[in-house]
Length: 247
Image (cartoon, rainbow, N blue to C red; front, side, top):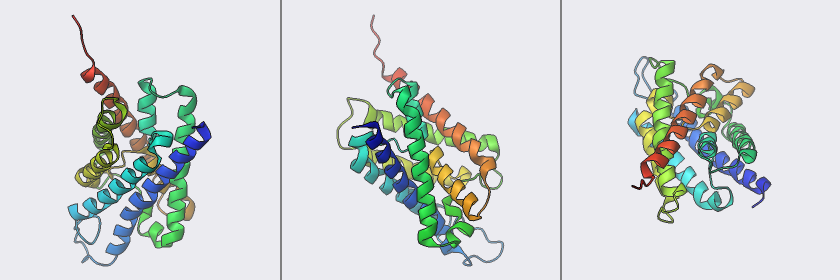
């Protein structure tokens, strides 16, 4: 496939991930508006705590799995700058195409957030924050980076095992990667938002900024450093742990 077609596939795949995944987070907050007694915190939305995060994680899981099965043969279905950078760092992806993939992913995420705001109305911005990620109260900057790095490490490790490795069984990549993302979001979402993906955070941040929502850019380095470090370490770790020694 030409680079242009592969970049379009990356744009569309990342669009799906953000529109439906981050959109689910925004809708959860919108549904919860006015449902809680003052001062009573039961989690992100009306269902309360883990159930909300499970629903959000499940939305991401479906969007990612569908994107992989629909577009994987075109672009490899990175849909995440951290994945692209990790594959580049381990010499599995050409330097000349890395920037183009990342730009396509960021553009897809931005379009998704803007179209979601158009679809759901301004309350998706003012109440739902377009599903933007940020550390929860009491979570420090370094702590949030650590959690994002650990979550993305696990995600990239699964990607290496079920999608990148030539010995991986065929046909399982989409569902296994999707379920991994869903599980990580359910477990760690209430710490730092469980982005695991710089583009996933970039889209809602830009949408909120342009449409008069919260200005969260101060937290953006968390979702650059954490996912990229976690993904790169996981890729090198996988190569190390699966390398065959002789002698």
